[in-house]
Length: 174
Image (cartoon, rainbow, N blue to C red; front, top):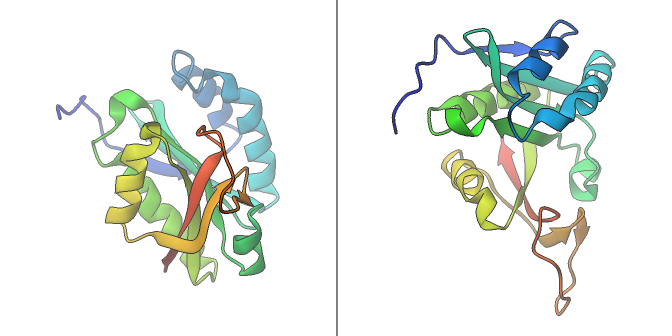
């Protein structure tokens, strides 16, 4: 894959200054409608409920990942496993190692915060194929609780819609 002229990828924590950067960087992407969500993330980050890590290059934000310290997913919450929630790299910058860098750094943040494991949910449709492969390559394994829809277990014999809410949860020892 051709490199897209990235100038020094910098990883940094979200701060109030980056809200405008977010809006400018993602205005022409599928992430353009997430400005209010990012304002919520900034509040949660400042309250130490979520850690938000940004990937920037050439004055633009090209990806981000968030770590929610208390997961909404029951198995992670019960076992004190923080969850990676909302992990994105702008499509034209994918396959250049940015996602891997973000993932490694967020794992480091979790480990330094005293966690023994980290978790993530991943969709099962083809749209999530690259993410599924990345997580396997980075040693994430299923948490052995089966399929979930909207973070609730899917019972055997149940019919479910295959969309962004259908997921399997993965864990990694830190």
